[in-house]
Length: 351
Image 1: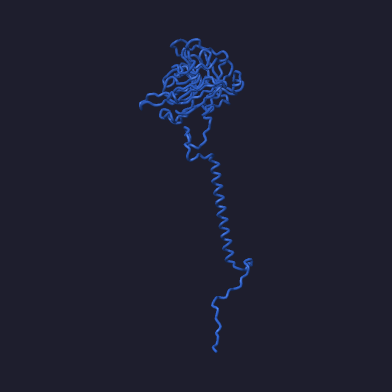
Image 2 (image 1 turned 45 degrees about the vertical axis):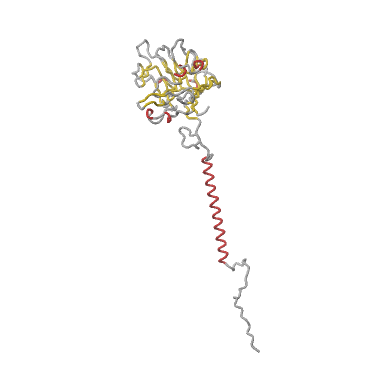
């Protein structure tokens, strides 16, 4: 009988296992698991921080324009999504001053000289405040621009009174002006002026014609606000005093394009009145318009007309930019003194 040889099991002997809770068991495996957990936590924290940064940037930028929207660019805007202020200009008459441009916001002033050659009559345009502001009424401001003008000449041809010479043109005027570009005016196109072609503008201010003001009984004219072309002569639109009433004047009214000869109602001397004039600035009579409110009443409904002119230049026809003037500008034939008070001018994009 043969000898039976016992078979040998070639599978390696397994070591007895112990629970992983034992701190001495599998330290490398636990270390790897902790490292993975730390990495996941780091990634989550990074994502959270990144989302927070994006959220803060969005909040600082404001509303986002949808990608399929076509935002309308506002003249002078730095970006289509940049909010634009409604108030573009506000004159400051809070401090009394003999200079109308020291702190008021106006660019400059045009004051007369005696006979056009003497010293500048700096007292013709001043800022008054408090008790020095005359008149009554709810529109009365705490500070006002006071404009005074004396006759151009004592006798015809004398030219010995208040004479203001501008670019060689002699006139009986005392005015402030503004809404001018920072660059040289003659080289700046109408699209780049503060009140550019294609824009909508609203001009609001209070006005006082004091007691004792001498109204004309003839054709003598007096202009107190002008939306003046840079190169043109008479302004397309102006505000005038005509025989005891306010009148929306200028070349458009003189051409019978404004109803009722631009009459804006009677003046009550000594009582402040508030005016708001809206303009759609265009050389196109179907795109331009004028709109007037007085003391809250819509006294002149929107009227279509060209509010800017096209003028001939050495480079060909160009749009004549407009700027703003306020004060007294009148016919040389006036023989009496005139004084008018203006509350702060405010220019806005919308009413």
